Amino acid sequence: MYNPNEITLNFQDALKLKDKFCHPTLRGHVTFRDEFGNIILEKDNLIVLRGRTFTLEKLFNDPISNQTSGYVSNLNRTISLFKIGSGGADIQSAPFQPYNPEYSDIDLAHPVPFVTLDPNKQADPDKAENPSIIESMTDSDKSHYFLPISKSNNIVEYYGKVFESNPQWVFNKETNEVYKKINLKIASNEARGYIINELGLVLAEYDGTNGLYKDAELFSRVTFDSQSMTSLTKYILVEYLIFA
Picture 1 (cartoon, helix red, strand yellow):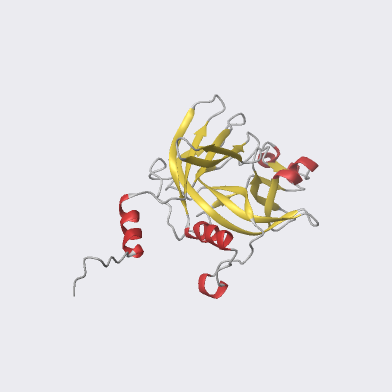
Picture 2 (picture 1 turned 90 degrees about the vertical axis):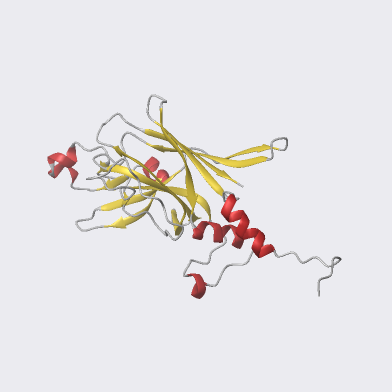
């Protein structure tokens, strides 16, 4: 029987309406600039399911079951690195029509190394002219590049890079706005010879004893118009905003 004094609140229905008419509360916005300061592109990005799940894990201090999710259980991680790749668009037929990222993405489609360690670089004329291929790691290199993958012939590719500076708070009570601003850079000596069209932020924990980041997982992904990295002077500055 209908009772006018009885009210039932169905929060699940409310969430469905929110998803239908609003952007997710946790979201990102990315601005790309070239070496001259010109905006190459500006667009929203996708916080993938793994990234949103990690946010809830941290808020409740309660790791989700690895058996249920397949995710790494480690609440000591932060958004610490970023990756770039070439799988955000069909480079051959539609380089300026990027695919839409999927909420289920757990990595970039085709990650691209920032630098490659090759002790025999000088034996190949093409490699000798490429500044992204290095013969040894300097102290600066060791503090910038992570997530190595070893190949044959003592070659090691580095797929993760640290941010240019610590993420900054932007907070305004009057406008109800709060976000973190992260500055990234794809330098003129990185990823030379590749075409890139995807970028992602990475969750990881720094292991100071061994000087590496561990338990890396993708937090967010953005795809964009393909950018050729053949020029030895071109670099890209990225301003990455994470809103809450």
